[in-house]
Length: 167
Image (cartoon, rainbow, N blue to C red):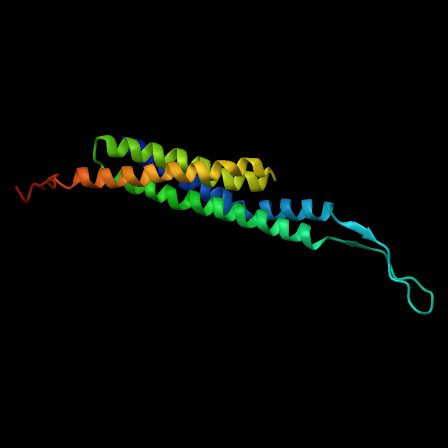
């Protein structure tokens, strides 16, 4: 099970890098395009001499704030996936066997998908209803941390492997 946790931790880490630093510019461009689509045509001001200034496209403050909040949720989701990928790698590196690996792997794996994935995907697709998975994922992540603790305690009694020189 520790190898599986290590593999999933690496896969989550790869996904976080692809969705974060590598794909960040694409996500920002998507958000900016969606924000520009919300722009409203505003007639130009009429000057005291009776001439009219050019019409302009304006984006409301509320739409800008909503877009900024979506971007923050996306970043928080990707950051969470990064953090919990490292937790899974750490769990896998413990190389213990038993319930700690199983509970920790399921807790971190499922919790990361629901919490980080729920935040990032909900923001990306502008579907706040996906975001309701985040609190559920956070609760499942608690099981992951408990599993990591259990795996660490299970490994305390193990003897280190002796090298040929130390035998």
